[in-house]
Structures are given as structure tokens and as C-alpha cells.
Length: 390
Image (cartoon, rainbow, N blue to C red; front, side, top):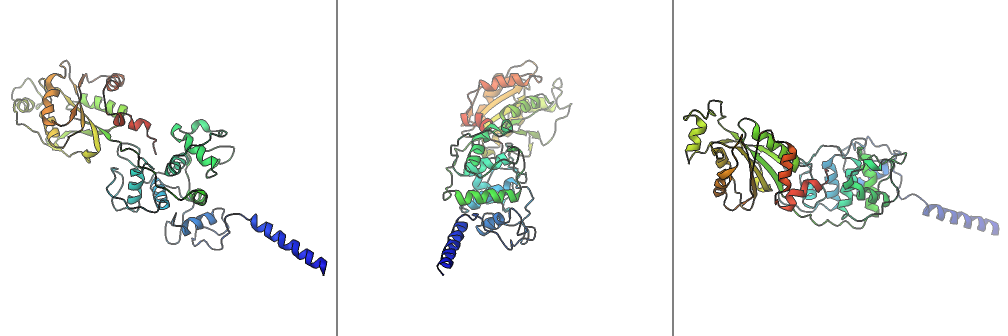
């Protein structure tokens, strides 16, 4: 009898030890999704995310575990993780739709510096999320903490510089690891099953989520230009590349013909407009969200020493108070002269910088040298160079 008691005591002790060593994630009998088998390696993570309101299915019965996670999905996941706080306003992206399932999430993520766009007004809602982008977004959501570098991945050199600390942080905390052969595969796509796994690890380990402080609002740069023969367009395209700016062509509602530009004919349209102080040629279309821009580079050809009157139309079409305007022009020989100063009366409360004349064949290096000498607002001049392309 005494031996029987001893065996029973040992059995209970062993059972206790085994219970303490059991994995943190319990097996599931039914995931509730027809495409997630109960014995799949990711099943418990999918169920955890669903039960905790972190990820939903792609339909009432499917989860789509092998589908790539998109940028809009990631923004929505982090928005839910933050408790779906109230948002107000609208985002400035051209590829998002008001009232879409991701609208509040993208607005929240953008306003709080968790996710930024590609530039040129694009967010990339349906673009697959890369592993380094995922690491950066989770790191930013957590307040951009410091991290120990640790040992390098075999493909460390292919990790973008803006993702270095984030990758170190997710590895140090066990949220993400290599994918075999000590590779991180920073540009590899993350499936929804992988996202559920990483999110479960993070949610069970992290402190109660704190919405990060909004990053300082960064203005945008617009290059607006009118080009009758293509010369000014060439300089505008150089500026777009140098500044990673948005590009807007000022298109006349009534296009100019070669006869309209025959300056040897006193009665041609261009000459008549230049001689008429009240001429304001109509513009086809307009700049969307002009209020988002804090720097506008304004380009035009020189017509009889002055800017074409369609530039006057453009300046009178918008409220440019406080905007920094940088004029530039193209001509075969004439300088920018009084053309720029005469435009200033059309936007008196703008911050006008000195302009520059270029030949139509000016190189990008020549335009770059000019831009580097300008006293641009610091945020606008540097913003796109320092922001990760997420």
C-alpha cells in the first residue's frame, strides 16, 4: 500500500511538470475556417488572432492563409491592435477610396507615423507587404525602440538601411526570425498565416499597446509647369526626380498650335495674350489637394521676356498664402529677368525664392546644383530622402 502511494505521488508530480512545460499555444479542434486545418502549423495562431479581434477572415468561412498580406491589411491589423481609435480628416493618397474597409486604418496609420506612402501620392493599398516593411511597421507601432544588433543574417546586406534597427528588434524579441540558412529575406512577401504567427507572438509578449506620438507633419513638394514645346517639361522632370515631388502639367483648355506660337506674326495668339494685361487663358483640370503642398516649383517658357499668361491663371486659381514658390524658366537666351518678380503680385503672401533660367537641354546635374543652393523649408527638402518607402 505504501509503495502504491509512492507511485501515485510520483505520477502526480510528473503530470505537474509536464503541464508547466506545455507549449503556450493550445491545439485547436476546429478553426472555424474551411481553409485552415486543425493540425496546420499556423492553426492556433489564426484562431488566437480571430478570437482577440486582431485579424478576421477574408470571408465568413475562409482565412486565406497563403495569401500575401497587403499594406492595407497591415495598417488595419495595427489599427485594431491599437483599439480602433476615432479618426478625423482624410488621407492625401490618390489610390485609396473613401469609405473602404481600410480607410480609417490607413488614415490612423498615416497620421501617427506608423505607415508612410511611396511618394507621388501613393499608399499602395493592395501591394504585398515585404518582410522588412512588416518589421518596420510593427517596430514603429511599438514606439521605435532601440535594439541590439546581434549576429548578422546571411543576407544582411540586402536589408534596407531604414529597416536595420526594426529587423534587429523583431529578431531580438523573437517576433520574427530567419527563414532557413540564416536568411531574413527582407523583400520576401509575408503570408496571412505568417502574419498571424508574428502578431500572436507580439500580442502575448508586448505591453498594453500605446499609440505612438504623431510624427511632425511633413509638407509635400509640387512641380507645376507649362511647356509649349517640351523644353520646360524636361527641366520639370529633372526636378521631380531630384525632389521626389509630385508633377503637374498646366494644360491649356485650348491647346496652342504652331501658328499660335509664331512670334513673328504680331497677331498670333501668344503675342495677343502677352500684350493683354487681362488675358487669362483657361486651364484644363486642376491640382488636387493643393493645400497639402508647402513648396511649389513653378516652371514656364519665356515669351517676350515674361511668363505666359496661363501662369497668371494658375497662380490666381489657388490660395498660396504661406507656400514657398520657386520659379524656373526655359529660354534660348533670355534670363528669368522680371518675369518672376511680376508674378509675385499674384500671390503676395507666398514665400517667393529667387528663380533660375535653364536651356531646354540642361542636365539633371545642373538642376541639382541649383536646387542644393536653395533655402528650401527643411522638412520639404529632406522629407522624401529620409522616409522609408513603405
